[in-house]
Length: 293
Length: 279
Image (tube, rainbow over all chains, first blue to last red):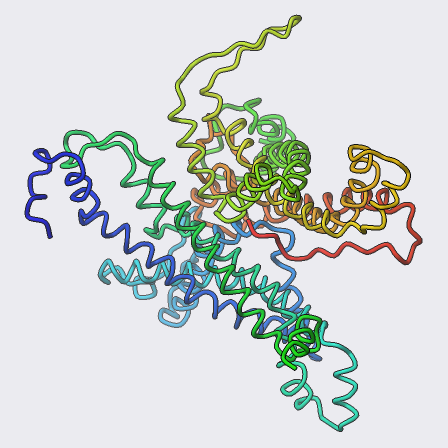
């Protein structure tokens, strides 16, 4: 990009810094911010879906489904979520491999778990040993996303379940009086009104989710924390851009990134809340309607 | 090795008492339960001290954020925003780097009857460095909760106090503070639970586990890495944390009943375990 950057030892000051900040490894670092945003963009709707499913299951009239839903929703209350993040990817990986193993190699006679090893037949390995490196990375990232979605889905389920209960009883009674059946009641009355009660809780979960993204580092994904540690650590003369331990500055940059993300989210969520409150049977909605008159 | 011998060897391993080497292979269930339980000592240590110290800073921060004086209000608001707006994970890394860069000097405090020698390298150890981060973090979260409660104190109470001729100091400690605590208590219970959960992050960030003395999750991941079997060690940690959470709910419930003892029974609000305050 910059022809002058080819001999960094001859540079100094701002030019050196500019060259330093545009090295290929730094570009990976900047791309890692994209990884974080990608994780958020995929995980948020997926968690909402899981949460919605969990909340519906917990309100089901079929007992086993209801127990499953309640168990799923209750799971995050007593246990730190990081335990799930350490547990989730390995457990999911082994579950997938085991299922494939049963399907692909049915005549394998030896046990899968041998002492300290987990052995499945070669064809059942995920991803296959022969697959290129990027497949392994994508697979790791997908496991991370699934773990995030399961954990934050349980958080969302909690909120959505509470929101269903918060829809005023009078609304439901009126719907019944109009002769709506259970399905109509759900689609026309409960679902449209539930969101405004769920929004404060869901906003909070969004904030938690954004702040949980550095945990990707623990799952072995090359995210911004990984690059901050990698690039910030002291570089000797052997590198083209030697510098002392600069991790502090890299982490300050991450701090600024997250503070910015929080601030932007806050502003967007306040607007969203105002819009969704419009015409609802809540204080915020009522005052808004009154102001329009 | 019998289970009793295991308890003797590893029961206090996390604080450096007992067997020097961790078990290397053929882990028994007893070893895993004992060693992970021993790690819980650190989780309880961090949680209890951070909450006990953070509580008082939180009151100061809440009052500061509610102040009319911008010189007090703005720093308090920024303190809350800084610690609530960024991930605890990043805060740990940042604090560790900051502590590493501190000049290495030894200080000694002469308290007259006893002399305490302190060294700045203690800050890079988890027991002090991570505790400071958790203390500031919980102070910010609790400060925000208390600030919300402070604004919800009925104005009639304060007017009544003024009518009795109380000065502002007396009004705060006798009227505002007890009501604030009462209003904030359900949320504060949640904060306490999630602070204990947050203590599991300590040894996964910059802070090294000195001589393999780590917390519950540190030992659990040690076992899971060695056996490649996550289905035993992590459920054990989960079990310990569920017990700890139930303990906190019980203890905080007792305090809540004490705070609400003057109210008629039906006015006492029941604490619901709501979902978190972000961390």
